Figure 1 (cartoon, rainbow, N blue to C red):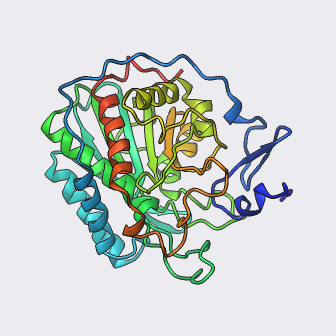
Figure 2: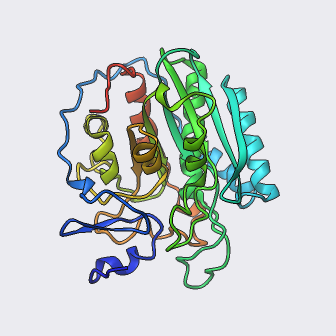
Length: 339
């Protein structure tokens, strides 16, 4: 792999970074020969934030993270992974979702994607997603590189925010169809092995269930949304494939007073579930993902054994949750096209 001084030393070992230099994208995958983070953005839609929207609870989301970690490491094929999945399914059903499980094997790995559907079965749909598995080895931990990652922020935080949203949907249903999708087998990849990450979303793209890809107008993916000191920059592929949705969400964050957490700054394109869903699945998806503005990492405890409850910060969960609640209850799929 070509080297870029300083900046690429850490990034070349990370699972998802793509850096652009003089029009050259560096990746283990074959990517477009342009820089998505430089894509011109579209005019955002002006939304009126509804005053009667339900209240997001960071305490509830925090408890959902604790519960996930209490089951143990969420590594596909393990008993703790199964127990966690069963709990997610039961929680979705308790909140009134119609639950579908896509179970199978992809590239030799067992996969269990969990889809909780709310609203009508017919018509256009949107989805909210996160990955629910955890990484089996802490490759960024200099002291314990072979031990598993607890994944409090990297995985469990996104799941927790979405489960809290499911609770709100049960109290005040949205006027349109929305699916909450938990991708499995996202965090098993190894550097230099093409398409070894995000197996759950790749599996779904190969055989979408229970609704076809064409049903979805747009999606929002959450990854690492609960840490102290988080910053959510405008990820490169999100700007390329869903620029208007990016601008609308970040403008709304400013309206809500969360501009410090959601600075209107572009960052590198990142290989994540959202990339496969957009570039290969044809669905415009925004990736809300923590990214260090200085380009050093996602967050200091990323892919280490220190990604535990001590990393989680309730005000960060509250900001992300409130943004999604305000957006979801202020819009419809037809009102907010991706372009």
